[in-house]
Length: 395
Image (tube, rainbow, N blue to C red; front, top):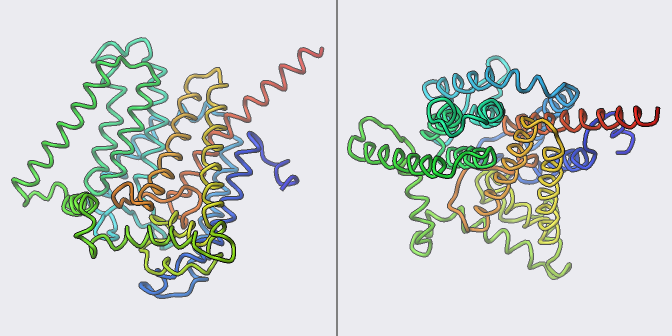
């Protein structure tokens, strides 16, 4: 590990946590794909190889990006945002459906898919960070400052809403956090929240009044998940996923041999075979069943340390754009991990948020490592400036 870190610039703690998680994901994904093999066929090695391909792509992207000058991130942010909007529109009409949700775009010839909303989240962070710097003295002005800054949040979350309510809420919440940190006046922030709720309510009413429009094709699914969560005792069948997730977590702490500390052991989990997407949406439940409460605590601490290090890099920067980017990336990673944990423990209704850096590879893994690569590029530039300053002081 020490020899490897000599080739990696930036924050070593972030590198260590990221690389350890990526390495462990190969073991855990191989263990958690029982239900995927049962339902879609193939062998565990097939899915492991596919995951390793994504890890290879992610590692290359992260390494390549972390050597770039962060000034380029601001320069391409507007283009990235337009690409994200185009991809979301394309996905809306021509996306590949999985579980009745058209969230994926299939890459020609290679047989891989990616979720356009994953890229859109990062693109929104970059573009909003640029706008918050550019419009920082105009945020009291509705036309010149506030509307241009809030528009990316409304556009991205609105385009995602049709097929992915939870991701749309996360995007909207993340945008609100960035607006708050960008010192947007509270009156305008509350107006934004109120307008967002009102627009959502209007869309729901139109969908119910004119179902032929099919404005929210997955609305019934969202409604059922919320209602089932509220009254889980009388909806045993509908709540089977959530109940099995909680049972898996309980099963991870009842082993007599190890006093319920380290779980059933890797590969020995019993309920992962009854959890749909145990390798993604219900990753935390599978993890606790096999690894136990102690390593579950270690996992939570790893995400918190990752957030702390990313925030530290952002706050240490003398470039406001870099600060916003780091805060946005760190917050997004923590939110996704937290939602996965809260769903698996039964606190939140079932959603489609997986564990960053650990769930079975795909666009989410590639985009997360891309974002971490950007943070490391910022950290690398900071280290270079510090070294140059120290060298000048010695002269």
